[in-house]
Length: 490
Image (cartoon, helix red, strand yellow):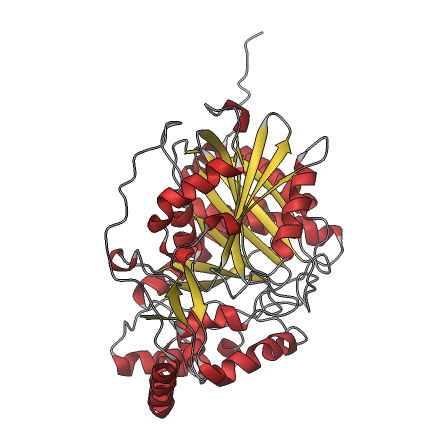
């Protein structure tokens, strides 16, 4: 028996007519180079049938509690026919990147059917150069960024020849309790909820100085520090920066429409910049995003004179929870130095900001996302969340955007015998987090960016991808000193 956590359920509750809460990714395949000369829907279905047991999230559907009295449960679908979740479409000529992005956008806008397992795969044929694409989406209530990559990895091989996969071992099926048992558990949880809510409130207070909006309340930092001292948490944590998000065109009520662009940067270049300045790869990624956003906002005469605020998801999945369906994530919230004109100063400031955020997180891992989700009863959160999100979009933004960076394998992988040329992730937009989400995934020597936006905020996502490329060129010039001009004897 598996029940959704409060955080998992929050991703369900956040869905509305304008918010689809699934994670997705696009794999570009060298289809014509596969041993069979193509990747077909039939081959993909056969692969899924053989390896479905390696991705438990794909075989589960939701079982709701009567009257919405508690969070839903997961229940296994016996004899699931994966063919019902696999679709195929062919792009019209010429089958270029822009057409692919438009097709992916149309698919990504659609909500998943909650009466079935919450995933779909779309094989997209007709891409130029003998290529195909595989778009896959899974609901965020079932996976986070890291476990989503693991779902994809279950289908991939290290060689064009598929590996042998052992059949599933016999195990007890995951089933939801009956309605009477669900109601009894819900009643018990309702009675004990006040005590649990008080414990969650106590843990939230220790993180009060790193929660957007809350950190600006009078005395928030003093209360958080005092609570950590009383609870025995580390006392010497770096002082957090101001997390006051400026108003920008990135924020405001979103629509149901989406735009998508994607592109790659050589990972070796990113590592070279990181090594030159004693930074991490993620520091450079954050700087690239800050520089691109600065350029995009300047073009619209909308650059604020204070830093943008980004939420950066952090995986907290332990080795013992590798097969657990659901979310094992937290988040760091950090300012981005979009207000700094000098690219070198921007890079160094971003590096120092991220080091401070990481030291705080290591000393006192933020649990506020999960704790906030747990503070209200399930019946209240399921009804109130969409309205609260919509109301929040009309107020000063808590953050300006979400930026995710998921590390991936640095060796070529194959799907149905076709080499995976690139993988571009996609995430979620909400009224609270804003109309732009930048997600990147490192794979086989490349840093692959997926940019998802609402056109009400960012219509020209390809321009933003171009600014990322320009920002990388700018950093490479700083990392590679030009040859000095020595005096040559006459």
